Amino acid sequence: MDSLGKQKNFSFKDAMGIILLGIVLSLGLNYLFAVSGFLQSSETYNQVAERQFSRPLLQALILYGIWSPLIEEVMFRGIVYRILRKFLPYMIAVFGSALMFGFYHGNSVQMVYGTIMGIVMALLCEKYQTLIAPILFHSAANTAIYVVTYFF
Image (cartoon, rainbow, N blue to C red; front, side, top):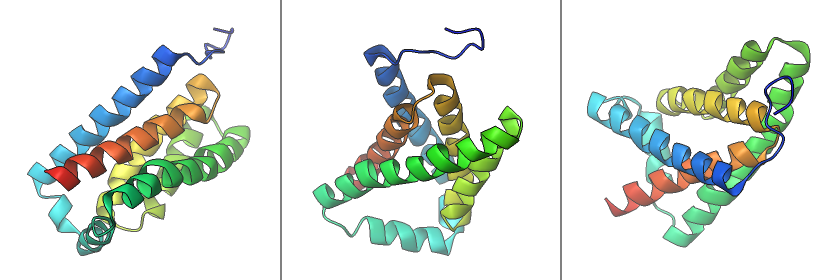
């Protein structure tokens, strides 16, 4: 690590930990949202979920597990977070980019979920100084939720 505490190397072990974190956090949040009734509180969310799960499995996994995380991470951590980080204190940039990511999703359920996940992804981006970390996390989270919901 350098003098600022930032890790310079990104190892296979780091990648596996990030993937596991994405899976556990996404499943945990979705479970909490489901048992609290929050998932059912947004008609817009339910419409989005219905559209997402009407896709063939392979198409959905490519779209939500690869393309969406890649594009959204380039946009929100690669551009938005890095611009905010240049001009604002660290934690304001983290929370600001996370809130923008949450609002981008367009409904209350995904706004809360996206903001929480956005905080974690910005922290990963900062810690590892690479977009690979939040992309892996985002991809693992989306894939885990899609597969669990699709099959169960």
